Image 1 (spheres, rainbow, N blue to C red):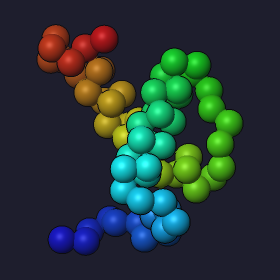
Image 2 (image 1 turned 30 degrees about the horizontal axis):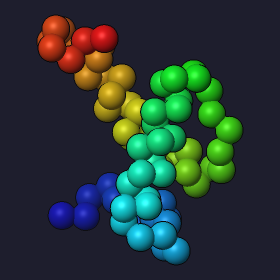
Image 3 (image 1 turned 120 degrees about the horizontal axis):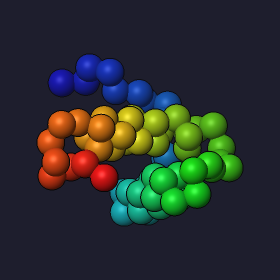
Length: 66
């Protein structure tokens, strides 16, 4: 289903592997440096990923806790 899919966050000129590595590197750098300078489009694309990781780390499950 297409619920809550944001079409404007797709990076059309890049192939799938480049998109995945770019987003993964942005998420890694936000946790490493605690800040990030990037474009608004890229920042909007990583917000759901960062939120999922933060909620997983804050949970009661000791396996996912940091």
